[in-house]
Image 1 (tube, rainbow, N blue to C red):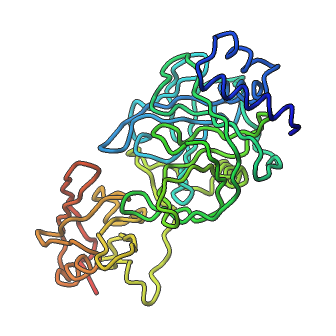
Image 2 (tube, rainbow, N blue to C red):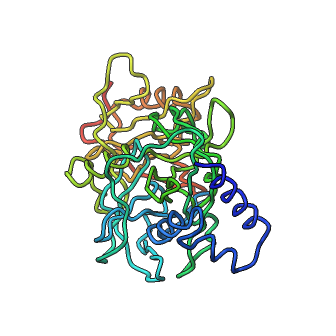
Image 3 (cartoon, rainbow, N blue to C red):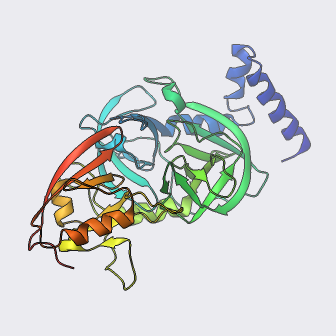
Length: 357
């Protein structure tokens, strides 16, 4: 970028921040503005998503259109389990949406709406982007836009690539691959699923689910790289990812078989429960995944549930959970009390052959 272009960009950002006139703002998003094309493309191709909110999980978010016939990438969340899931396009159209694929590792989901001839981003070769390049983030933080209003945009700097090592609340973040870091604040509620563009309006990544860095003890402002997005979409279109269950809740990908010395897999009666392995002395009994077709899946247990007790016996940690299950060897019915968001839920689990060591 030349000094003159840099100066023009800085002047534009300063004018926008100081609340300049409507004419100046209109010029900034016009074809002649330094980021006008990128902003226009982002606002045309980023949608608002509304679903269900539970506890601290918000019922709104953003999505990025990746095909002319209504395929949309967004972040995986409980919002998507709402029966009235809907998408609002840039022109204000409100369309019902369905989840066609989920990726638990990348924390991404693929949605579909019935529409044609939509503007969309190509998932081709990732554009070249270097540290210090301008980037534009387009999303709907804090549900600022609800109808035909354009989504919010912010201009910042690409800070580089890194391997993520983070968590969400008390749980380890399942994705541990490459991310794109930026100084644009995109860790706000509603931003996940929005688009990160280069200065020319090319898609470079999709804003990821808010995560807290274990390395820096700060919220990460990042996007999932385009190659990870393309890999997920390719697997989803090819049918190699699990589809949503009939009840609308996510199925996990195939769980690994128990390995020798794997103390996080609880096998009593082959319940099909895998717990998170968290840091610290006491490891809360958070559910990492539930194997499809297992007794736990049939009971309604879900990933991210916190198991509080089993058949009246407290399970304050993974170790206590394991101990209780060993004490209940032979039981054909188990009662699980779990904390799901802000709710306390009781589940009745029936083992097929009784619990065995």
